[in-house]
Image (tube, rainbow, N blue to C red):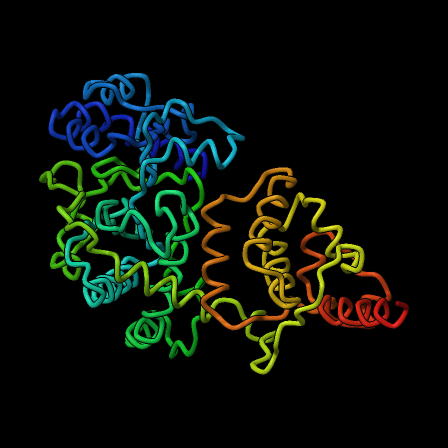
Length: 420
């Protein structure tokens, strides 16, 4: 069969089943109830519909199907009014609309058996961290979605408002979970015959190791009980105990039974998971920070003068277009290293952020300041590191001779003292 013919057959198959499937009031209710406070987007076989959109009534689901919709997708983020969202919206405006977010762990693999192993390992780790109530569903293809609801997370962590830390904190949690399971995942997948070889490391994800998809702002995922265009299977809800024996035929739209995807989680049930993930990220994720840590380093405690700031620091302080997070890392560690008082440091950081073309979230800055002050003083990156190129800053030849912004500052300060 020619590719175009095969595509036509698949499209006809899914279109033939959509009206019968979505006409079921229980299916409509499951999709509608889960989608409350979420941005939704219908898909019309090949392409997505307009964004933003939302359901006002349960019957809206079938009305969109009659117009050609084949599946429905929704946001992990919870909004006070999803219809006020727009492309190019500033982070501050999104933060004002966002009332929370669910943690959605998206497991994707070439092979359903490997996705099953990954899902079981993640559930084991989550339970170890006290998360007993979670939802799991088949993605509709060869993966699974695991959800931890918003009410399981604390409203604030490390003095930061949790709702404002999307997608940064969900990303960190997913990275932490990935790190926790990787050794067991390699071992268990190596027991399968399909790879025909022992999987020795985690660098073969494209061939074998399932991916945990990292979230982004306004990231959408398939709603529970939505159909999948390529497989014509339903995104059915499972219990953790059903994963091991799950077969693709179990997701046939003709034989499903409705279950609730959203678990009845306890308040703050995922607090330990969040805190452990943030601590892991702070201590392990920034190799650059470790390379620049000097355990015996003491702040210069010199009289602050903007005139003798290194040229690269002066350029950063004018505001940057790209690499704002790198620039923040440089500034915090430079200011701490020269002995700047905390109150002045924070004022300068927030003043600098206002000059950026699109300012960083206030919550992100608060988190970085909080973590910095919990740890020893760290020198800013040396001039030969990619940090500066990533910001669009090219250090001068003089700066490169002194290697580090703090060394440059100390030398200039000494020169001024001698002159006076």
